Image 1 (cartoon, rainbow, N blue to C red):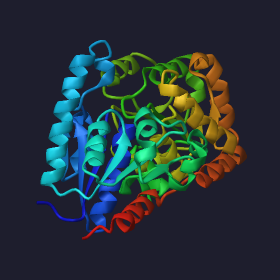
Image 2 (cartoon, rainbow, N blue to C red):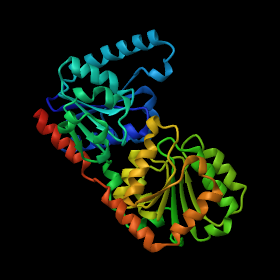
Image 3 (cartoon, rainbow, N blue to C red):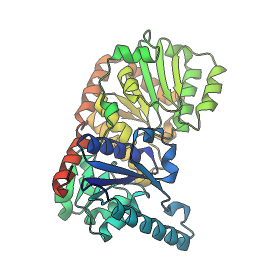
Length: 372
């Protein structure tokens, strides 16, 4: 049997669900509890999971893969639920935290059936399907954005706690800008741009950055570009960049593990608008040019981005308008305006909640009377 301090953190499907789960895992561990991170078998592709000692994978059913085959989905869900209930019993789990994504659903159902306390973490402004379904059965819902409360019934206000999005410890590690620039061999650069498309990369952002480089090569003189392409696009753009003339210093990688260095080095970020990356940008006070993914469920990326725009921390460009001739002037105007960049940086920091993981762990530990 496991320890009485065992907490099951369940979520997956995208880095937006997994990264805050890792952050909570780290915080529970550092406080002496026994966390287990439960993800789907498809999630092993996320290299950040290599830092987690106690990670368990299982074959969770996906509704989107079985939308036209409900019997198959039902069977897979029952199998996953049965496995999860046994797992919870075997490890003497005291609480289950749902991070979102289809992976978390069976473990939340299992916890409720076994009368184990359930907690939810909602990363986006608009609650996802799992959060919406389990909200009334959860002891607390931890939100990244204050605006999320408006999406729940008024009688649930007592259970909604605005704490921010849990960030991994190394993301918050303080790094001097000079050291970060040296890491990317960009000490000579006057300005540095960070391009990040989320945990899986964004082809649209990669194409945009490439087009700006080729259409406005002189404008990138003495400019550094830290460019996270995503795994699927890396080889394609590595090859394309070898065949063009440009004036920028480019660090190209499929994925940047030491993101703290990229945030410390950059002056502005061109990014999608997933909650995870937005709160990392806020923690570092990085001004951003946001291009929300237009097909995100309930258009949640745009709603996330608008919170940063309203705060004065970001500029928003619609995906359909994200062409080199439209974005380049906005980007260069921002880079040339030190006063505006400084103001945007300060506004971004007002949105940061760097103690989110600690606040969530402290609340759950007290609420469940977890033992160390």
